[in-house]
Amino acid sequence: MVAPASNACTGGRAADGCRAARTALGVLSDSSLMARKLAKLSLSICASPDYLARFGTPRTVAELAHHDCLGFTLVPRTGTTFWAFGADGTRRVPVKGSLHADNGEALIRAAIAGLGLVYGPRYIAESGIATGALVNVVLDESLMDLGAIYAMTHPTRRPAAKTRAWIDFLSRKLPALAVGW
Image (cartoon, rainbow, N blue to C red):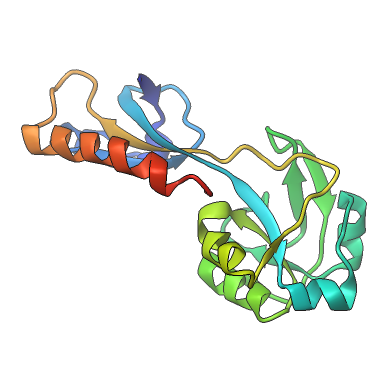
């Protein structure tokens, strides 16, 4: 399935897409680029079993006020002053945390070390969840819709055979890899 995609996801450089495909993450809006959805993405809130044993497991978004919420400085809606909930992120819940970082992996490592709760892409947390180093926390509000991974191409120029082969390969392989994402 091919759908129009956003220039914002390519850094606004739509002309660069004329020669090859680009990948984009997120929820795409209309633009002149064409996008092929490769895999769905989701968010998760998680913490280490040790953190949850020491401070309890929050069950409502209101309880986040009593927890150390590790903040991602590059994404305001899962950031340092509030976390957003609901598919469109319109429900804003104030949070505070002792650690703010611009790197999701660093926040996951901090959560594994027992420093707090982390709200971010499931694909970053998945290995920690799979090994038991992290526990997924389910709250009374739905998490935001993260969107998907897309391959983006120019809308009128047919990509080169090697580019089409790469996109076909990704469309076959990524869904199986992204089951927990």
